[in-house]
Length: 520
Image (cartoon, rainbow, N blue to C red; front, side, top):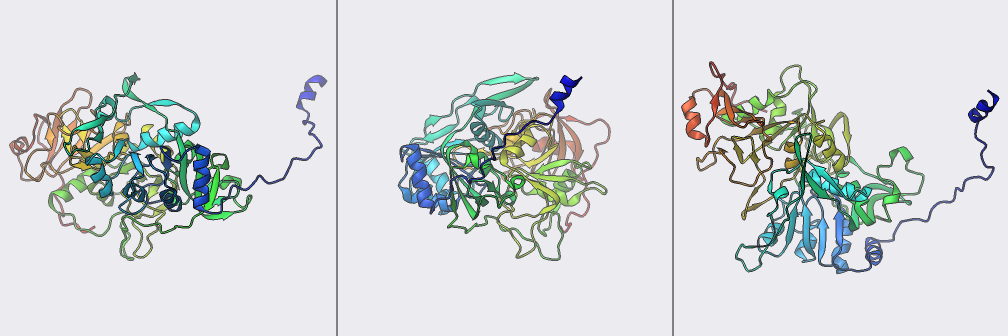
């Protein structure tokens, strides 16, 4: 018994005190000095891979991008969710011809990017947003590759997507993407994705200390922690730099072990892409005052019926977002924005927009009480694991098998898939597509098979249009007409639809057609 008690006695500690000497400061005197040190660590100036934090223009390292533009570095591979805008952010490096390849998920706001890509002056590797975040996170965690359900059955998995066009104006492809290895887990196809490890990471923090510990603010966290971890040499710019110990350990978002140098930001324009505000008297739940009429209003009100109390929901920009204004009585939902916000609230009051608080459409927003922020990789971890139970988004085409196309028109529109492939590819999540039944030229958008590149294969549960509602059988394939707009017949729907479909038994319920001029 006594021998056993010995093991329960307090450990005898050494009398030698622990050192309290501070580590050498990681603070550099200027962004230029920090970039010079990073290039020196890499051993070369050209052909480097830069992992650049930010989402749109939110949380981008403006000072460091400016320093890179002046460094003369070229043949850059830039890994960043977005490509900046013309003349700002990474757009500066594109216009100077310093970037050889972009690895991004969405580049819709940069006309220079689109022109360079289609003319063969830029290589582009479009990657689903969640996959991009996870590739960066894996690179920083020492994981060489991983399987994901995102993009299974699409051109991203099957290969053949144009990375580079020939520069002779012929429109022919010079470099195309390679097929990914696929494997089935629990009956669900998964795609093998490789990790990303960059030579240099450039990130933006709200606050840093001299040891490199970082704190982010609002949705400006986004890709910054993931990019920081993925770099062999990470440079962080911060709006405020404090002494070691002034940031409580519990408040550190990214430990200094991932950061090699810190610099105080010299460029803090923090430009807002979509300044979206509401009148001070309005308490609209996330949408500006607007009038939704006719078929558009019909779609919005029907989409709102998909909300169930306690749901975590992701809403696409446009019609899906407007649906949150028509919550059924007694129903409370939590809105998730994939750029790193759970608990998205209304647009800010006029004059109160904050560049550090945006949604996935780059619109300024506010958080509701009890909201939380997190990194992009954490955000898509919630999505892939089906913690987000309902996704409502727009579409260009839907097939009778539940395939969705909504991200690109080859050779014409180059926007990127953003987070759509991740959202619709999450096994078990309910996917609702809202769209007009026909294109502007009158052609059907619901087809036997999509003619545009797929966002997801066999992923759609419900299609809500201005004319009707279709239920999709994702297992066996096929559509069933379950609701119809007032004044239309089944034959009207057949004439406007590019595939066959079944009709619900009995009398077909009518879509809600009340108050078509509802003022939001």
